[in-house]
Length: 116
Image 1 (cartoon, rainbow, N blue to C red):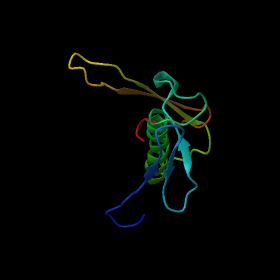
Image 2 (image 1 turned 90 degrees about the vertical axis):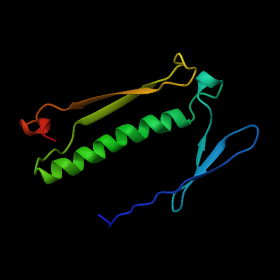
Image 3 (image 1 turned 180 degrees about the horizontal axis):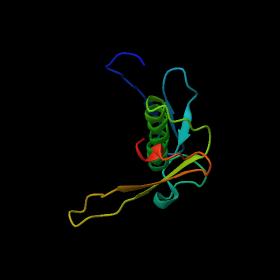
Image 4 (image 1 turned 60 degrees about the vertical axis):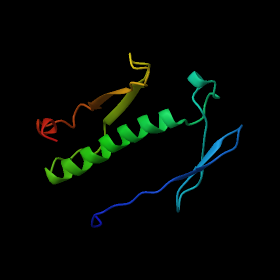
């Protein structure tokens, strides 16, 4: 691991219509749009789906690091899913919350997964 502090940068560019191009150094651009719930197109990454993806990706990457430190070997079978729900609270501000579901496949559990 590189020494702290770690810095991450992303940029976005768009116009009044069409996709928004999200970019960062050394990675290909990613076209995004509003989700269908906000009249965006189907089948395109949105800020909401990217946020959910980052939560579940971080969960697995963190589990991997903790498992490695605990010498817990797992080679396959960890699956995560995040659901984000948002709406308007009484104050009329969005109130998102996350539900993260995870499952470690049979045959890879030896009791130490609860620690990790």
